Length: 128
Image (cartoon, rainbow, N blue to C red; front, top):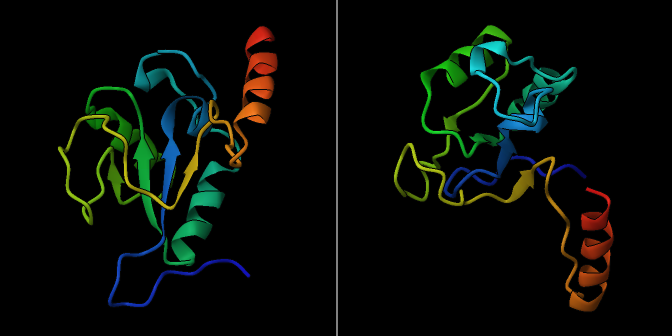
């Protein structure tokens, strides 16, 4: 069963989606105006919206109004960029965002086993 939004008295299910390399095709530091949204990204985030999820775009970039403009031009729904209104923080900074789920091209899923994690991370790092 897909998690829908939580009951109305609490914080909605929150997904933080990385910008560079996840929503966009370029994982480097191209100018925002030169970036292309990945195929399927708008559809996926639209589905998250239909489920009632709170959508945060997560980026190490400085707060840049061009990011919001690019997302709007490509019909990519979002609630905030580098900010979760339900938990405070400092808007415009890339402090870790409070979320239930993180989608990131550079992420690694930790499953509670450090020896296994170390082995897998070392293997991945040797391939980069």
